[in-house]
Amino acid sequence: MNVLVLGAGQLARMMSLAGAPLNITISAYDVNTDDIIHPLTQQKLGAGLAKALADVDVVTAEFEHIPLAVLEQCQQSGKFYPGSAAILAGADRRQEKALLERCSVASARYSVINNHDDFNDAVNQLGLPLVFKSALAGYDGKGQWRLKDQADCTGVWQQMADFLATDSKQAIVAEQFIRFNRELSLVGVRAGSGEVRVYPLTENHHVNGVLSVSLARPLPRQLQQRAEQMFAAIASSLDYVGVLAIEFFEVEGELLVNEIAPRVHNSGHWTQQGADVCQFENHLRAVTGLPLGSTELLRPSLMVNILGEDSTPPAILGMPGLHLHWYGKSKRPGRKMGHINLSASSLAELKARFAKLIDLLPAAAFPELEKMLSKLTD
Ligand code: ATP
Ligand code: MG
Image (cartoon, rainbow, N blue to C red; front, top):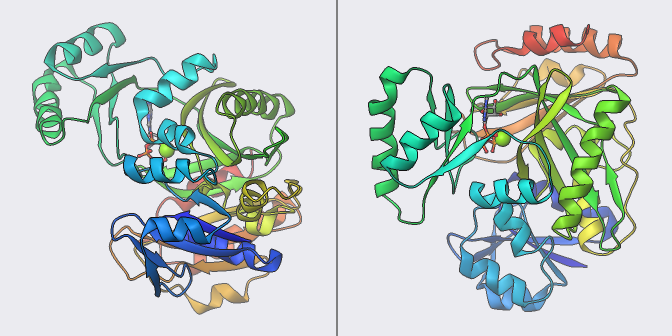
């Protein structure tokens, strides 16, 4: 089987690594250059979407910010999973919010801002504090503004007005600021038959809007079931095929959806070592029509993102239960360069191993890891 992935980053790379044992061969399409790329070596294999689509059995995506013309061409091939409607629901926060409303899934109250009147309405009707997010092209907390005090309205609006003036297709979604107890995500997979399998809820810790640590361990059954119901409602309303991720805020035991990602997700990287079949393989199984694999948690696990660093102390590789995954990228400040997966046979053992890992890693490059360490006693 040959699969084309829209996007040539680390997610295409990890799909390629997971697909090889099943004789699934991945090529990656760079939507900016129109080049076909080898997802591991980054060598150019060819150019042009039409030829690439003709040469493969299936096309899928590793990200959602894809030009409309590319999405339409893929959709017309009849080989595109999860398909352009699902990708657009993840790419445009207006569509995402409308989808959640259609599915009767709870999320933060919101309104759409196109002009100054809309901004004033949002402040009056939703109240402060507010989070503003660009409707299009947001990722890793980029394209966001916070408003806490009435006194800052003029300044924040001016920044947003300047932003809106740069692109007529843009809008801003204003959202109530949620005082959440923690952030969770659910990664799951849906087959063409409608069968759904989900991994256990993952607890996520962000630093400056970017995911830093994900922790997977059994959580209360009721919470997991609630998340699974929301996942099933969203996935079936999109007639979704492939891996889908849903980010939640947990507020006093209730779940609010923050956003969806129509693809394999950073908070599911721990599945490479902690689950029976990882998210990358399960995505490929779903989009190529193979039976889904088990999503069972085999052992408590966590993942630490490596941001803006291209080396880690060699000693960490001597630790039991530790796996290092580099993405082969050149170094840039804050860039997702790789991740560390750490697993153990019990939570107590995971905690001890995580404490050792924190000791070995340079604190400046890996801030706030202790916050997750303290949760391992909860
Ligand atoms: P990513 O692509 O990394 O998931 P993103 O740019 O799509 O990020 P969000 O997930 O919407 O953005 O927001 C980034 C982070 O900002 C969230 O994980 C959360 O910590 C915080 N955040 C977002 N919306 C709210 C909200 N309404 N109330 C409180 N915090 C929020
Ligand atoms: Mg997010």
